[in-house]
Image (cartoon, rainbow, N blue to C red; front, top):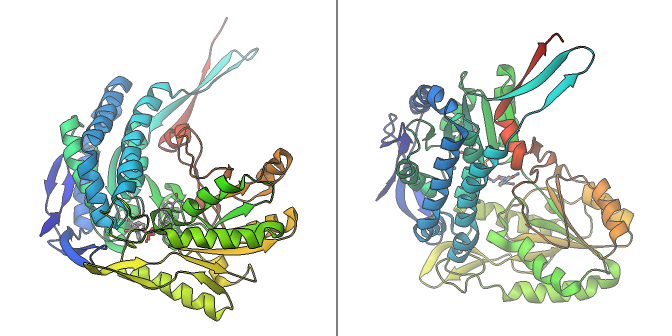
Length: 482
Ligand code: NAD
């Protein structure tokens, strides 16, 4: 049995709790290992290591930090195949996706922030006449906490820890207990790259115990969290009385607005991907599709035909497009929404049933589902399902499309398909989302701000926004005489 243990102070160690949780392989529906079920004492141990490491790391030169981050990036590349297999086994995602997206992006995160820190500058303001000059010191915060979800495990874990350490902080981090394996393997890479011990400590365990202990720790001064909106609310409530700095990247229910004047074939290709990539378990998937009525019938027919062609199967088979859902409870949740859709009067145009994959009969496979809905306020259209399920619905006017796009509690990303630049600008300004993609999807430049509005979160990651989050600005005002 594989054992996933903590990485604290540069060493792998068993949890002080001496407790374990089962780790499931979702493609087989079998337990294939155990994970440390760390408790408050383990988090305290990780905190102490991080505290000890902080003075030296925060005073290390930018070049030194950059060098280590770039080295970690290269070692992730060297280990690409091994990490991709681990990610696919742990999460159920197609190996082809882990190999082409998840792991390369984890490496890119370290490379990006290893370079970005060398360009990170602060402001100076000279007050002519008053003979003062103000400048801003951007100092690391101290020991910070990073907590990440299961859908893009190493990708999102590194998206937080890389800027945190680049900026000179030391970290107590917790990956999702559902998919801990690649973060576990990262420990080896950190040691090999020469990251000083204690700079990044990785604690495994559940949200309510290990996660809560990080958020509630009085000396951990900032929390960068990605996960569900409900968890985000809880974290905000716990952290607020201690005035912690918080970055919350939460759920989404993203609209995909398709106008008749778009490039139809490109839109169709990308919409299949934006609906079902990673089994629809990407916070940026466009799960509500609104189509201009003049092309609605055509779209419905073509889209459903394309979705039916998506091969559901073994994540390790290169021809698989849809792998397993991450866990049995998650699969049950998604199936319950398919039932709800029917109860609410929606029409399941395709998919929505469990699939039996030969040789992997207990795996958590679902046919991707397209549901036609008649009221954009129905629950299936309002609540985050986070699985291979999209709704489709026609609209008549741009105003109506925008109004439906905005009438959810979430506001993470949005996609618009049109060749009309004026419309692009009108909608981009009015749509309630942190990210707007026009005639594309999931096109990410790591320098850009990333995050959501409304119930999709608070704060932005990406580029200098992340380095600003992980530093505390301090204004210094100097008076001089002529
Ligand atoms: P989750 O909220 O259940 O868990 C996320 C992480 O938080 C896990 O590591 C978990 O152990 C931890 N956690 C749970 N309870 C905690 C607590 N009380 N205190 C501290 N930590 C706690 O989310 P999930 O099911 O792992 O991920 C799916 C969700 O993540 C979806 O809602 C999805 O939209 C969201 N997500 C958002 C983004 C984004 O960038 N906005 C990206 C990916 C996923």
